[in-house]
Length: 177
Image 1 (cartoon, rainbow, N blue to C red):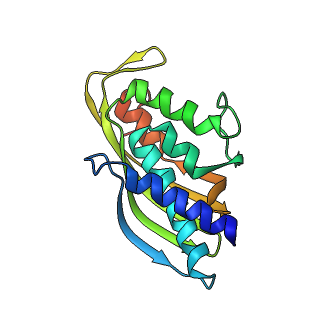
Image 2 (spheres, one colour; image 1 turned 30 degrees about the vertical axis):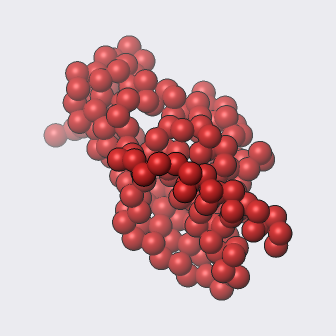
């Protein structure tokens, strides 16, 4: 319990220490369906919020506060490193293509130590993605994550993104008419 309280205090401290910025992650609907003690529940919610604040801002200090050293990506894309460095790698590469990337958490459902999150990513493709150069086109696609949180840190992630929509908006793939 002491570790959970310390992790909660740390995660909340990171979130509160950050100045209120336009890039603060927006949470549309939060549903908590859990019977765990309030401190553990709050630590789980704080870790999940910090994880999406990282995706919203690209701030690796927030990522470090959000995920455990033994973090596992269970749906690891080819070329992405496993472990805590994986999300940082993905964010850097994606932000090279879409520097103004933002994420809105549309719905977050907390059930014990699992968190299901449906989110919307937005930005403009002004950088490069492989050999494709962006022309400023709007990017708007959805993703869904299932996180496991232990000790106030994200330990596991299963995710799915609407990559067909993303790649079609980037001009990399064409949707059949």
